[in-house]
Image (cartoon, rainbow, N blue to C red; front, side):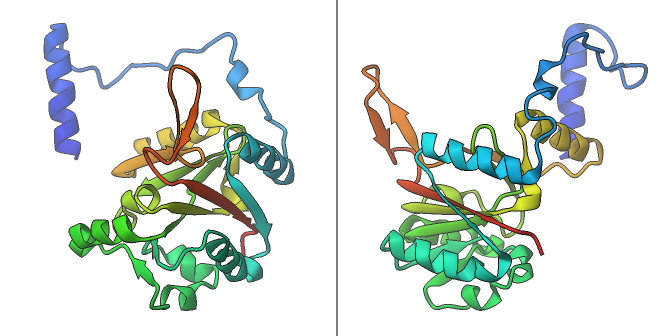
Length: 229
């Protein structure tokens, strides 16, 4: 990945007719930065309230539970959607939140990076896809997913329904804070292979503003906010 980045930047510099600049480059110091003022003093509980209200606007179901109630909340949501089959990320956080037994159920399959083709096929026929949110934007009701081994994009895209488990600690005010965190990861060389911002179920509208749900993704979505252990 670093090799491809260097090759790309070398090409841009050549087209500009100058060598690459790797030192002495300063970030602009903007006189006004209103993006940092929105919800800047909001507590985690206040951000949960903002997220809950935004979920109404983006047609997304919302639940908030203690960590010990998470498996029950998942079961209730799966039953609410009338779902039978589930695909989930192969993510250590499932075990950290006490969901190890949930993953061993016959109806649950895990994303297997060693056989991504088969995992995609499983995602296509699964009723529900379940992932964790890495960063959660309260203002827009957006979950941020960092793809990596065991965390395929198809899990949140192909099933009929989608459930995002949101650790309360992942809540931030808006894209401003998410971008700052991603920029930090970039500087540390830890940028994920793919970053997806998801705001509820798939919504589309034609020129007459007729809302159509589920054309480009899940028909319904549920956010489950859980207190971190």
